[in-house]
Length: 143
Image (tube, one colour):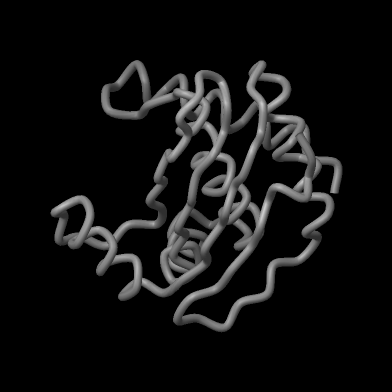
C-alpha cells in the first residue's frame, strides 16, 4: 500500500491539482483508518459535459453531478477504483455553498473514497453518516 497507487488525470478540462503529495498521504490515512488496503485509485478531473456523458452511458442518468465513483475492486477491504470529478460542479458548488473551491474539492474527493470504503448516501441516515465521515477526515488534513 503506497501513495504511488493514487493517480491524478484530467479529461476535457484545464486543471492542476495542488499539494498532490499531501493529498495522497491524507487519502492513504483515510483508507488505513477504515482498515482497508489501497491497491489503485485514479482521480479523473473533468468538465460537466464529460461527466454527463459518463452518467448517461454507464448509469443511465441524464443529469449533471459533481462525482461518479466506480469501484473495480475484486477483493474484500481492498480499494481499487476510478473517481470522476467535475471541476465545473466543484466551482459552482463552492460558490453556492460559500466555501473555498479547495475545500469543496477535498470534500468531494474524500466522498468518493468513502464510497469505495463501503459508505453509501442513499437514505437520510446514510447521508448523515457520510457527512459525518467527510467532516471527520476533512479535519485530519494538515495542509
